[in-house]
Structure formats: structure tokens, C-alpha cells
Image (cartoon, rainbow, N blue to C red; front, side, top):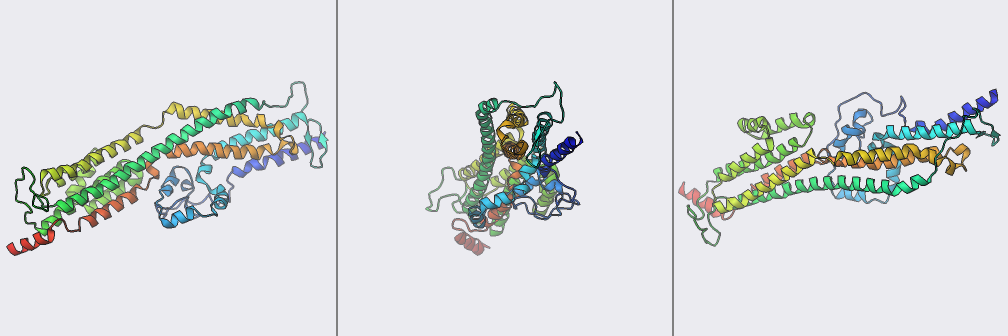
Length: 425
């Protein structure tokens, strides 16, 4: 009897080892002294520095490392023939899989329990291949298990739920990216038209607009022109930067937002935006005022102002995405369905793995199945709120740079007008 219990303990220790692969050990590089991260917002994946705090390895802290902006070099790496090997090699470093570690440990523990209990209650195979009788005996002792058929029947339904969940979340990310694409396009358009039309009351062929109240091609003060267009460029940048702050967590962006505004705008202008209850609206109002002050025909101002209406639409669309998740009952049902399916799966996989030693192959199979299926649901959850994984800061910086470049160009007939202005003065 003693040897039977000794063999049983050895067997349980053997089958419990795979389940520990998902538990961080005390000497793991993930458990480290927290330090301040110096990673770029444009870097992809978890921080390469092994001393980075574990809170930035996965979960909310890792989202800032997913704000990737691709260039040609990144696309070449993306298409590399070694990508499959690299993805397998970095499997254990995936932030997505670390995020679902608790769920994977739970399902793997159920698999360990099923194999262990059935060995104790129904007999087991020793290391030498000999069969041993059940350690726990009694009329009430029975092996546990479930038929595989119900899981086979439910698999298509679970697959449809996961597909709809991930597709809906990706569509939300794609919609948010397109809103910011519209912002980028129309900030350029706005500054281009303002720069080209500044001071012109007519077309270049001297065809006057109906109702023009000032002479065509009125002389332009180059200093005032530069000041007016500079204000336009700054308030264009201030709008998108305020929108970025509006869509970002306060703890992450508030200090940087206030610092950037005070560095680029006048103290009163920056404070007006910072103190506003709805900062993007205030910045958009300031931009509208800057457009209204430009010396040009009202019809041209109307064309420029159409871009502001588009900005209102993109802002409202982003607010809708931020405030309205995928209906909670759908997300919860999918999560409950998936969790129940995976927690009960080890009971159904016991008999199919009878060809392995004491059915032990069931344990890594359940673990990998859980990693990949829970990972799909986690991907959908991470994509559902797109703004903290979009490189919005990069968008804002580029918009500011491009707008400053556009207003530095000369507008229609400016060379002639500056020469006339110089002669008059």
C-alpha cells in the first residue's frame, strides 16, 4: 500500500509540472524593481529593457507600446520570411498571452485535476509501464469525464461569437483611425487654402467675386500675413492636441498637454483652452475666430470653414466610440460561453488522449487551446477602445509640423503684392 501511494505521489508531481509553466518564478526577469520607462510611444511590443516594471509588460501599462507608426523599414521587417519563427520564439513574451495567464492556469489546473483524480480513482501506469490499481477505492469513487459530442456541436457557435466580437472591435479601431486620417487631411487643406487665398478678393484672372467689398488683390503687409497665418497654424494644432487629450487618460496626458500648450501659445490663449470644460470645442472656436480675421472674401472663408464642420464630425465620432462600448451583454455572454467551454473541455478530452502516458498529453493541449482562444477574446477587448493604442501624439506632432511648413509658402501673387506694399512704404 505504501509503494502504491509513493507511486501515486510521483505521478501527480510529474503531471503537475506542465501547469507551472504559466506561473512566474521568483527569479523571472518579469519580476523586477519598478523604474521609469524610457520607451518611445512609437515602439511596438513590450519594453526591451528587462528592468522595466512588470506593470508595463502587459495589460494597461503595455498599451502605449502598441502605438506603432510604420515606415518602409518596418514594412520590410513585417514581410520578412523569418516572421513565423520570430513569432513562435517570442510566444512567451507576448503581452496578450500574459494578460490571460490566470485563465490559462485555471483551465490547465482543471486538466491536471482530471488526470490526477482519474489516475487515483481508476488506476494508473507507472514509470516502468506497469499498471497499478486505484489508490482511492470505494463504491462512491468514480472516474470523471464528459462526452465530446456537446463540445463538437457548440464549437461553431463559439467560433461565430468570437469572429463577430473581433470583427466589431477591429471595425471600431479602423473607424477611429479613419477619423484621425480625416483630421490630418483637412488640417492640411485648411492651411493650404488660407495660405493661398490670404488677401485675395478675386481670382488671378481679375474676375471679381460678387459682392466683394474690397479691391481685388489688396496690398498685403507681409509681417501681418505671417502673424495671421501663424495663429491659424497654432490653433489648428491646438485643436487636434486638445482632441488627443480629450480621448486620453488624464493621468497619462494632462501634464504634457498643459506644458505643450503653454510652450506654443500665448499665456492667455493656452489658459483659455486649459480652463474650458470641453477643450476641443474651445480650440475649435479659437480656430474659427482666426479664420474669420483673415482678409479674404467671405465665400473663400466659407470654403475654409467647411473643414471645421468635418472636425466637429470626427470629434463627435471619436466621443461616440469612447463612450459606447460593444453592448456589454454581448461581451459578457461571449466571455461566459468561452470560459465555461474551456473549463469543461478537460473532462471531454480525457478519453481521446488514452494513447499517452496516463492521458498526460491532455494537459499541454488544454493549456495551448486556452492560450489561443482566450487570446482571441483578449485581442477583441484590447481593440475595442482604440485611442490608447493609436499614435495620436505622433499625429498631432506631424500636423503641427506640416501646418507650419504650409503657411511658410507664398500665396497667390504674393511676390507682386509684397513689392507693391514695399513701394508704398
